[in-house]
Length: 306
Image (cartoon, rainbow, N blue to C red; front, side, top):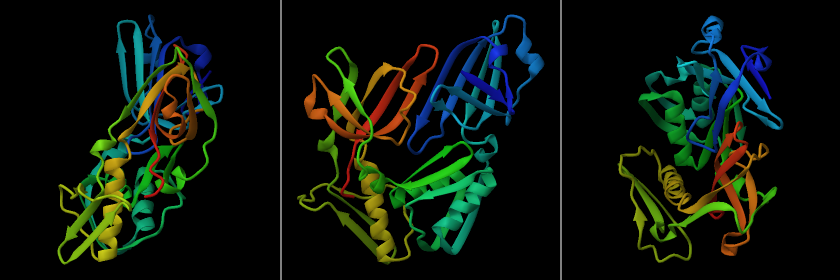
């Protein structure tokens, strides 16, 4: 294992008793919680602070650059909590744009957070009017990405935005076998799925309906959404429908540490005692416990057609 704080390697100087990393495919920042034995109070002399950079490695696994948000000395231990998003990104602001492209909004958010923008398949849509009202830059951008059907994550100093549908259409990579004594849980709530969605915004209306459905269950947004054309309203309806339906079929499994599994991976499941669940899934969240040497992987089925 390797552990760096502000570029200095310190793993051989510390006694690690707890280390859990959480990574998400979209919507939440990655995190790491480290707890060290510290009977002599050495950590307080090293004095790591909010904003300091930290990076952890365990074989093939790397957190990349992360930022300390909290430290806590207690009862002969010292705990550090860090996230992939800088602490300063929590600042709320208000701003409006007219005639603005998606990439301009994303670029401004990345620059203010001190991140490098990394785009994969996201179209540079032009918006007539956009308003960020007392929201964090990344929080507002995440909501916009959801409307457009994009995923968003932060890893190693990069703000990554990708087209979810394009990701789901990729062939699955590595296969994971869940044996007869495997630890897993599956859930199918597809009966709650919507058949389509409709967005009303002043004079503009847009609907997206799943082909082959009766269209009895239509999703209408609970909060007002601003659209400046019928095409934009239709695009938002598709994004809202994806957000509502994509997590209805999925589950999780726990095995020995799999450092090669990352959030956003497309993998293939082979389940010995629940074969209907075999097939391609998207990893939405992965928790690695680097002390207990185990991984808990949360996944969902792909939508693929929208």
